[in-house]
Amino acid sequence: MRRLRISAFTVLVAAAALAQTASDRQGVDVFRVGARIACKCGACSSTLASCNMLECGFGKPAKERIFKMQHAGMTDAAILDTFLKEYGQEIFRSEPNVYGRLVPYSILVLGAFFIVWLMRRYYRKPALAGAPAADSPELSRYRAQIEKDLSQLE
Image (cartoon, rainbow, N blue to C red):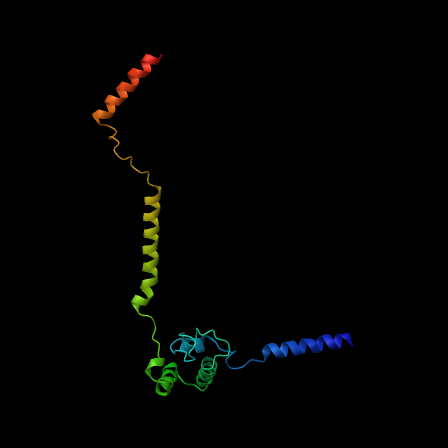
């Protein structure tokens, strides 16, 4: 009897794990198309691929629709055209251009240079105000006076 309960429980857990909706079965293909479409739920400014809102009123049905369109044999361009005709041009998100890919790295490099500059400036020994240079005649005269005073002490 106990073995029957364990196997029935195992079957139920396996069925629950395998029972997925179209939005749960999204793969790389759905995210590839979803990255080009803006989410219109009103709560975020993300794309369909990056919308993390639970039970999104626009994102979840749109992802399911993309999934069905892809399995019907439509190309990515045809799916995008369908969404553009239905929702207008403001829903389209293009891929980042050269500047969009270059800006984050250039900011990292500039930040590294700024940190090095700050560290050098912070750890630099401050120059004494009004101190004579190491090879000046005035300093050698003071050293001679110090030597003379020290010799008189002994």
